[in-house]
Length: 384
Image (cartoon, rainbow, N blue to C red; front, side, top):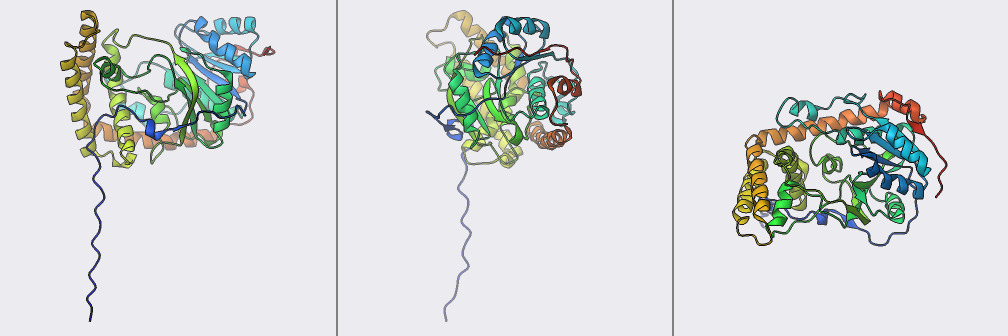
């Protein structure tokens, strides 16, 4: 008589301790030479700078023979954009974006409202307007392009549009100034490895399949790429150039970025290690926030002896890192868990909103549906 022993369960391999990752490139598919096979339906430009910054996007739209949507605020205006587009012979849809638009109220925004984490900009709002407009106008393949992006080749945009047959988002590779958070710039300044990731500055999305939105927080484009389980299938191709900016000019930038940077870097590090969004529990966030604190301490300690930095640069980087520390004192593991729960709720809210949008509208009617003025629409024949 033989005795059968019950098989013992094999424990799952231990996941690495939560920590900052200098690269998330393993989550992306790099496509080097894809034929330029598909036409873009529109280029969406959320612009807040003076209108000369819009000229590159207008020229690109003319070459691609597709409309440019300029969502204007602060230093940009629809009137000024209209005048430039008429001179250039570009099909332009332009509107001034007020603070209140007919978009859903999000749980993520309510969670941070009236707190030190409330965001002051309108970039997420404009990108969500772009998604809603595209849905109503029956556009399927659109590009988001920030007004400080340059050197985008038309064929790279066409290739990215073609890649949407197999991907949920395609970004252009950045050959210009690294578009990182203040903390990641500080890592690079002290000689630590730090790469960039794809983002909303130059990316192409399939509107018909896109069910996510841009939450009102730093790294909103990283959250846009997430679904309930993890990262949507994302590719990178071609190239663009991000114009330089000064990340350490004021300490406010570090404060404003800290929550979104902690959340996004934490989630993407977890995905790098084979986890899922559901694994980001209280224990994970406590460990990750501790690692973040220690990492910033190491940056501060390395700054005085770092060659190639002036004393003024050392002072500004140090102050920015102390500002990061100060803001993180108010970031708890409980807040991180609550934010991700609110984000899941908001995805459902956004999907429901998309289902209510009328389809097949003209631009004037689509803008009016969102509560936007529609007096600055001008269609000119392209001379591409």
